[in-house]
Amino acid sequence: MTKLDKPAITAAPIHDLIANRFSPRIYDAAATLSQEELESLGEAFRWAPSSMNQQPWQVVFARRGSELFDAISQNGLTGFNQSWAPTASAYAVVLANQLEEATARDQAETFFDVGLASQQMVIQAESMGLRAHYMGGIVKDAIAELVGAQDQWVVCVITLGHQGDLEGHDAAIVERERTPRSRKDSASVYRIES
Ligand SMILES: Cc1cc2nc3c(=O)[nH]c(=O)nc-3n(C[C@H](O)[C@H](O)[C@H](O)COP(=O)(O)O)c2cc1C
Image (cartoon, rainbow, N blue to C red; front, side, top):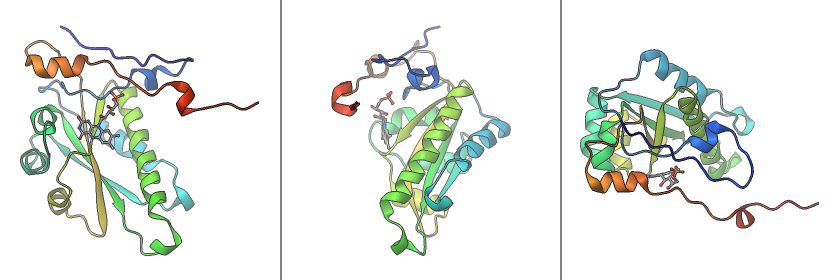
């Protein structure tokens, strides 16, 4: 049994939940997520902060084996995502509401809020021993139709599930999985003035 750990190499201590999160492409294809687990993920998403508390978001979960999951796997993914994502236990389709009072609210605020809710859900997933992987490589129009999005943008799809064993997978995907995580250097990302 070989499961990867890919902790962030940080310049100062950070919480394990943040350091250990990474975007896997090898899931346990036999694992499932319970109704309760998905509800906890939905609640973490729901309780995110948002500008003026407008909560311009929605998330649709599709469990592996559902019609929606199969349809997204077949018609909603692009490129390499098509090969690995269908082994996840569920997809979370993240939607941003096109608010009527759009003029009172910059679109950037909407997407900022949706990002907060999404990452809050991802960290909740990590706390439950799950892994998550954002995908922007998706066919947004097809997914919008599949989920019946009304006045909503499809922002991304997040795969959810249990991390899988490296053994038994193609060398190409194992190599990608083993690729070290990297970031810009600290000094170019933040500065502290005193
Ligand atoms: C909005 C968004 C879209 C992404 N789209 C994809 C994608 O389509 N396919 C993919 O393999 N990874 C995708 N990623 C994952 C990033 O490549 C990954 O987060 C980044 O390389 C950092 O790696 P880490 O999450 O393991 O730290 C996406 C991430 C985000 C936040």
